Image (tube, rainbow, N blue to C red):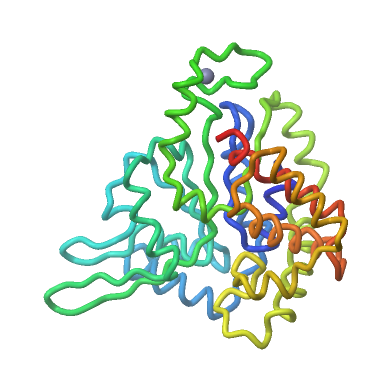
Length: 307
Ligand SMILES: [Zn+2]
């Protein structure tokens, strides 16, 4: 799961972690800002601007030169999530600007998630009031987490799952397709005892991971230097850019075709797999996408498979 998150941060991909309670999803999510590249001065000023519009200047001062991490509860109101109100204030999506928006227990958010679609597409939210319009930016990395099923124990060797297959289907169907479409990486986590988690955590510091992430981002910045993209990341590639920068060798196309068929992946998964393969190759400082990069990317579509 850590590796998948590193890939996600390196390419600016949104990520969904699926795992039973206690598998460390929240802990990993909280660490994400520390492995992201440090914000530029411009990005930091944007963050400060939003926090002061929200009346949270003190928090902004405490977070000096750090990226924000916002984790609204699933009972959050629409205004609380996207912003607005009689005296328009930025919502959680803007407070997460240039940082991470973490939605734990994603299916519990329900229909409020539909309100994320447009702002995620635009990278900003405009609120109209009698007195005029006000625009808050909201470019964030979406990190979502969910249990594998309603009771939470599907696939957990220590507990027995009590859900019927219909219940599992219904639980997963609560996440809307359009939102799922914006998430390039799905990763499943098994339940690990806490002691194991802290052991793996000690293995590598955030600073070490951040170094690899930063080198991968440099490669992307150079690649997209001539394109008018606000986010020069692999996740933001257009269809034409994917064709240009994610070319596969003949043998690799065959692997991907047969994987799509065998795992029953959706047609939309194709481009996502290519984008993520490109990021994995960048992390590996490889100019071409190698077969091992492609295979790893195919692994990050687990939810497509199960649905
Ligand atoms: Zn269950």
